[in-house]
Amino acid sequence: MADINAAAIITAAGLGKRFNGKGIDELPKQFIPLSGKPIIVHSIQSFEGSDLIQEIIVVVPESWVEYTKNEIVDKYGLKKVSKVIAGGTQRQQSVEKGFHSISSRPQIVVVHDGVRPFVTLDIIKEVVAEAGKSGGAIAAFPSTDTIKKSSPEQFIENTAPRDNIWFAQTPQAFRYDVLKQAFEKASEDGYLATDESQLVERLGMEVKLVKGSKYNIKITTPEDLEVGELILNTGALNKK
Picture 1 (cartoon, rainbow, N blue to C red):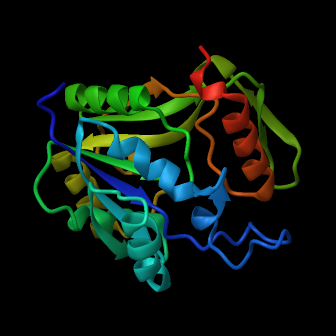
Picture 2 (cartoon, rainbow, N blue to C red):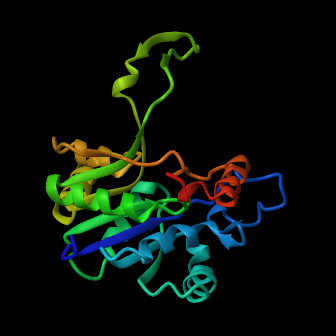
């Protein structure tokens, strides 16, 4: 594992339109404080602390590039961040721009949501290791709830077998050449996906599921922020 060369793309190009009404809507959600530190800083620092990650690309809204360089990267001493770039209008475009901004050609490229501040070093390590073996792997969490498929009129169409349902998380990691091919194929087809594993699946490749954590939440609403504060204040991440 120590000889794996990996680069990370931290995606934070959204403007957080679901965050409003609590006096914090002037900041995109990724810059909102979580226990005194911007959410995105928590996310980046996890990758900063991983021996497997040699370079970090941060993707943010165009109007927030300079702010990120000054108030995030420089202020918090994030040494592995080589570039802060402007994202696109869609997540896929932002990740692809990050991919093409990587300085070298690493073995593994890891993609992580900037608003998932509780990813652990162990999850990063396991996802990167599995990607090295199979070509692609993602953190995910098995469903503990019964899943219903709805009709457009919100009537139940069927019940999915819970044992086979996983909730996708990030990080998602892929061999460099695999992700490159996936982006090229999507561009040729004019295809937009909601995550990178979907693009790789379209190549006919298998993507390994790595068990993530119930605490590896994506902060998208003020209520999520309250849950995040609770996770930090109770020390839940340090409990087995």
